[in-house]
Figure (cartoon, chains in turn brown, blue):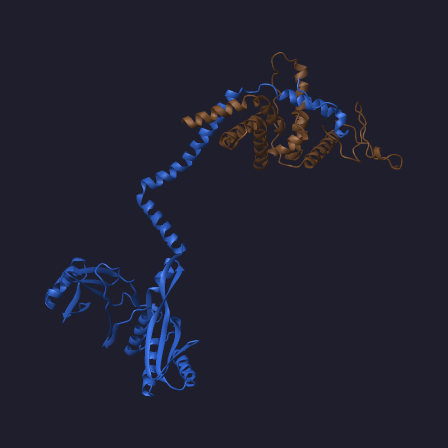
Length: 214
Length: 344
């Protein structure tokens, strides 16, 4: 490796240092398995290395790298269409729990992970990214819009549709009660349109006006 | 413990509570056993090296094939060059016809100009005639100009000269200037080569008809000042074309134009002996270059100082060089005129 390459790798490693752990986890959450997630992360790092000269403002590296990660994610999904037909046994490992973990708790966690991974796999790539980045990674709607190169309403729509689809999946699998039907009498109060109630959750309106997610 | 966005109610009640727990579980299971950065980067570097190596592995058999078989490389380059030449357009000059300028002096009655123009139009088969009139004491001088395309097959110079002769006989002072109309065109090598071959169909034509056609086709291609002779001698037909060109020593040679005689649409090349003689005069003397084609084999013969040699010596020298190239032909030289035929 020549000196220029070495310098470029050193620069990239320094920039990756603060985001590495979270980015690996994000990549895994977007994929169907740990191995696939790690592979996606490595592809994103390789892409970042090849395009590092285009990064002008290093303070914006996190967004820049995540945009590259999402881009690779979508490319892989298009390329690896056939993978969705593979069995789920190889998804997130159900092997030995990490040291210090309660075995039963870990088993339960593994089952839950497998369930949500399957649920997320039913979403379109952009919807899955929006849900994972918003729910788990703590990105704001504006940040996701920037990463996905989409408008804010588009991201909101992806989130809403993604959640609807997830709920449908949970219902079909018997993990959630069927959604309550809309009341026949709509004259009483506009704000109660489409009310859905779940045990343990507050009642909320899903129609009428756009909610603020942040 | 992985933090998920709090307050499920903010999701508009769209997701079931199970989703909350599952999200947390996903957060937890994906956050363990994260490879350290150094390990990840090493893996990426290794992938990159392997990707390059894979390319080398793909390319290596191809490179080896060409290294082991140099003829394949040459054939490949030649094929690519031929392909490029047939596809890539080149710019070259082509004679597209003849510009004829007929000058008629002493026209006292300008109303006759229209009649002369119509006559010229009919004789040349031109689409239009441009007329320019200049007044002088002895009457008007008309210049009638026309373009005759080569594709029309008309010997424009000969016909215009005949018209001028007739006008002179009527009392006008007519003079003709016929110049080849050269245009720069763009086309591939095939089109260029096609333009440089003059094909003359000989079937059912007499020697004089063929002679006239060759002369006309040469003139159409801008080759004037030629002597064309076609003679039938029993079973053979002899075609002789002589052209002279004068230029400074070292000046570029004009493009080569080939004559191909056809019979029933088929080329007669290979049926007889084709001889191309070129005499180049320089301060050192005359160098004679011959290209003799017989039975598909072309032999180049160069005879320096040909002007100082006797007919017999010249014939002997040409015969010697032809034999050295494996061509056993009958060479006869008479007063500097070379005739080469097959030995009976």
